Length: 92
Image (tube, rainbow, N blue to C red):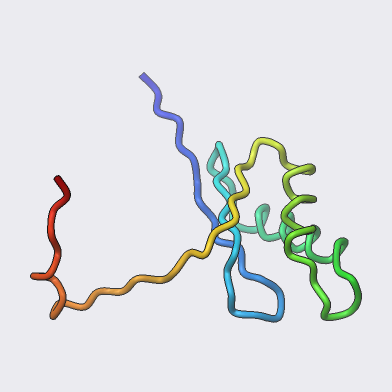
């Protein structure tokens, strides 16, 4: 039995630290391939120098790579805080 492996990439917006898009690829890909695709999309949808249109870039990425799942998100980085560990309550 073979297991299909997908890969998740978090896209960094150009000139900001906000990360709004996550890409899930159906196959394992080198990071450079996804970086090239995102860079192309940002470059060719920009409204001018240093004026990226990330929503348009995400749409172009969907058109050029229809097998990739491009998800708009407000993903947050969550670290470990051991002082909060005992506050966790299981669901159900």
